[in-house]
Length: 101
Image (tube, rainbow, N blue to C red):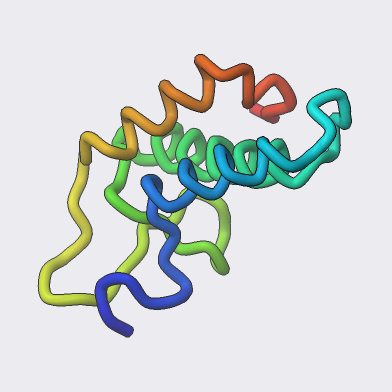
């Protein structure tokens, strides 16, 4: 696989999808697609940080939660700014209330 290929999950793309979908769903529905996507991403980032102490530039969307992505011309980057920013934006926007420890 290459840098942007499946099964990599990229935080900026997750954020764009969550924001776009949120404009077209019932905001009072606790199971709306935007909430599901945001919660899945936040859970993935949390599990990665909780198990390794690091945030990654991308995550593997098909393996166990918190696993770094792979592929491309360089190894996965640790402590990547856009992951940190997307986590903070999603939390600011009220997502993540349903996270598990």
